[in-house]
Image (tube, rainbow, N blue to C red; front, side, top):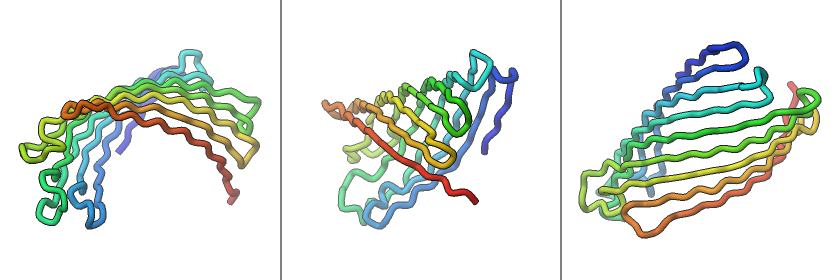
Length: 184
């Protein structure tokens, strides 16, 4: 469910969303089957009065409950990956080009997330008392190469500090895609 409202014409708008998500993994990962309630709000700010430059602060809250499957799981004590999480972010986007078929898009963002795992089983060594603090930043460039073709290049860095571990988990991803849209 999504509700959006333009507050100041071409300068300020807001969106609020609710999603109910269900994850159903195959029989080897039944402990990860989950339901999530996700609430989010974002504000779109166009400080120059047009779509060329946008600031987008946003917030998301997720409550995930797992059904688990401790009886048939091969891993004992790892049956509750449920958590309550809060994510704060800011995206900056620039858009320019001679027409709608030759636009360039440059985008950058930063996110800070906290996940507090909700397992109440002290034998759940992977989740009991665990808190994750995740930070992520990324940048992307898109170029429309005519009416049907688009090139995208993007990358991000994600850090996950886990309270139950002395390790920090880092992930770096770079992606390049070329898309073609067929006309109907």
